[in-house]
Length: 382
Image (cartoon, rainbow, N blue to C red):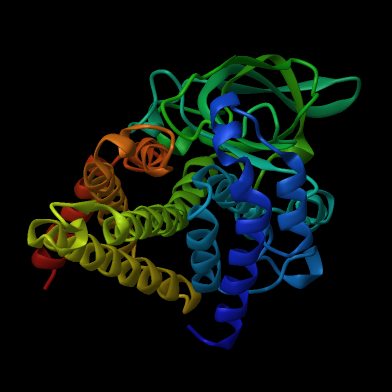
């Protein structure tokens, strides 16, 4: 890490240990999201890191952002994910929004005053995202051109606490080419919230259904142009792959840290359990896999910073880092034994949080499909 990255990491480490860590056990149990923590992270500059300064961002790189997400995730995967998804919304607005849309919506998001949410998945459109059936039909109400949105979205991170939602809906024929993207604000008539999911992990981060019933959206809230929605969504998800990977690295690092510290102090058979070779091999493998994951994540981030995005590498970063997080956190529970299975130690929480990292931003099976497609293309065109 360079000097700036070390400063960012150290500042975040100090903040998370003082302000986030003390609340984690209680807030995970009660599913309590603290908006004041998000606001404070915004005041420190961590909720708009990659956006231009003219919109309140810090103008930093995706590599810097990945390092920050990794650090936050060491205390809370939930807050790291909230920042990651809200930043995805910012990136969409910055890349595809017009001048008025950027000016209107970005400052509140970059400052951490508000949260953004990305709305693509439906009950019949998960991995097959192009199969979505929510509709947006042209309409004119009170002399204002716009669209009437009908349908629902599920698995929406920050649903209910976000203020700005990027919603994908069908304006044309079946398939991705018929999908458009809209900016929908909390409180818009016809927009309501369905059930809040009871999840195994990410319990601090709310996941909720969104319902649209004759919800009128003015034409000025259309992003780019009709039929561009699927392209917008896929571009956002590509960046989301290595940011989720960064969060997975932080989750795994914390689990390894807890494992090593416990193993050095826990005595059995008149010696620290760290000195048993079987456990040493486990921890050596954990550390090695984490480092492999980190390097993939950072290289993928650098590719985007250098304007040479590599979809295959981004998929590899997400796949490797999240599979590693699941394996490392599971091994951490095993190393701690009985207490690892209790809430006396945080490893069980990180194990629960790690599981869904293999599912969001495209399941790891889908990542393998994309990687294989790229391999086929490389081998058949050279």
